[in-house]
Image (tube, rainbow, N blue to C red):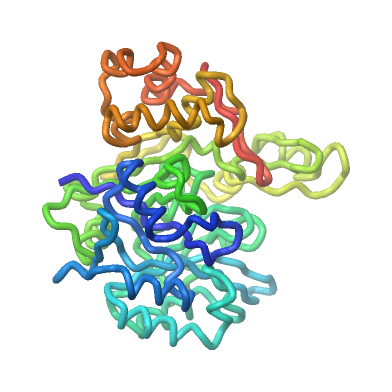
Length: 402
């Protein structure tokens, strides 16, 4: 059975999220997207945890839960802020646990480092990444810690602003417990494959959604083949990088991400790695430092050429949310446009889910259900024929039909 999993999202209790990020709206959006397994997000937040305990039904023997026609895994995200190596480090981590008792134990282990009620993704001050892993696993041996959006400049494991140059440098004696990293929107599996030091870990993808709309949920995801999904089997498939069970990841083009290139948002300046190095990462308009993007950061740490693929690598498919595909084809440049939403919803009803439209609907069927330019745009996404003006310094990339 195919299982499409989006194991990182946030609740309405996290900063800068939609008020509709509750279980009901998230489940509705997940069904429309075609997602089977969701991370709850934010299990460190006491109000959200109380809601999870009240509404989620345990699925016996699996470590997973049911609500709203979707299967759920208990998940959270924390922000570790600490001093190490003479620098302030800021690293986001995903946390997973198999039951509510384990969640309570993990929260107890972390509560002394920050106010867990302050944000769905709380700041843990003075708690280093290695100590976080040790405390979480000591609280529950089956708990899992995964570096979130590993390359994001401000809060990623390898981030140019406050990250590290290697897994070992960050996690020290706990490195062996890190068996996966999340690629994030601004990096792709091929970019990560350029680092031989990552050959021993799996690459996972999730949406980091702050809205329940289908163009946010599942924009990145991990896809499995499991007869009966369970907490243990999901993470065993990831840990083993078992291509029989871990089929592929769904990615957006990394140029779509907000931090792909080096740049300076205020001045509208962006630069590819070689140009950024020539400029010494200084904005040519105002003379201030630019934010070093993910592509340049990968270049700095890579020990392999672009295009290298390690043996046994998990495959991936590159997509773009359906709303944006329709917007692109129709020349509409705003969110929540009624005409685009109507066409999106009509296609979802016709084919069962957004992912069915994007991945599976035959071209001849698309041609019968939508305008020719939209059908062609969907096919172009599948075939990798989109071009992008790359994102930089917090600005999303802009797609165009090549």
